[in-house]
Image (cartoon, rainbow, N blue to C red; front, side, top):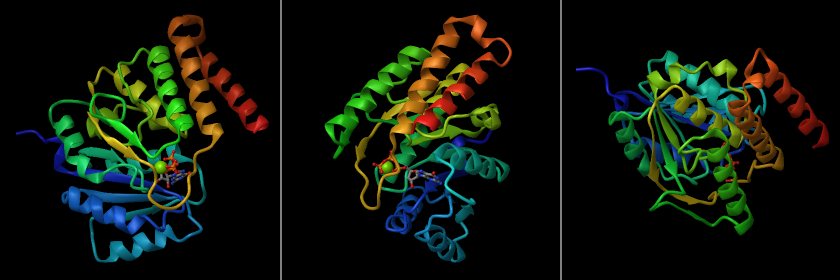
Length: 265
Ligand SMILES: Nc1nc2c(ncn2[C@@H]2O[C@H](COP(=O)(O)OP(=O)(O)OP(=O)(O)O)[C@@H](O)[C@H]2O)c(=O)[nH]1
Ligand SMILES: [Mg+2]
């Protein structure tokens, strides 16, 4: 019998100043999926998040921490975590926030989706049965409109492409050149969903209830939203205009726009 995705799952938790959540979330993840290795990817949080995980890892071989030198964004943290998990032989890679916005008890359902043949299983707020609790009306509107825009521009049949609670089948992830993945914030989630669908893998969505963060403070910024919108726009235009796909035209245009975004922020 072949390997199933849920055989050796790795759960990757990116953190920046999550000391008030990290021990509880790691415990909840270990309880929800006892077979999982939990890899916390911390960008040298000043509040000592990584030290807390390191103490925990001394008594639990399924808990690990990857320390990175400085705050470099969610996308970079996940790329580093994916590389480490894949080289350790992970069969599935789960993404979850540290702030209890995502309920770890849903993870077995995401893994079931992979075992049933999906390349990516997304915990979705915007399919029947899914919902968002505790978010402001403005944030909800931005999220909903952003998701509509992404699915129209990229032609993907995904209702919640920005969702940060999801599971990848390892073989699907291995086919993606992580060095070529460029987005950092919500755009990272959209870009990964787009790449998985372009490779022909099935994407499924499992309904979830999203909760506002339990403790600690948000790292959301308008730059992250602008980056995601800009990338969806360029990729969407490139799909329709072959001229832009030639050589490095698309990448050069994105580099240029990213510089403009950075300069104006
Ligand atoms: N390693 C790393 N983790 C990050 C970075 N930015 C955010 N995170 C983590 O990514 C997850 C999602 O970030 P959040 O700050 O919760 O972003 P959000 O969910 O959009 O916003 P709020 O829930 O309102 O705070 C959390 O676990 C953060 O600690 C980063 O630059 N590096
Ligand atoms: Mg959050």
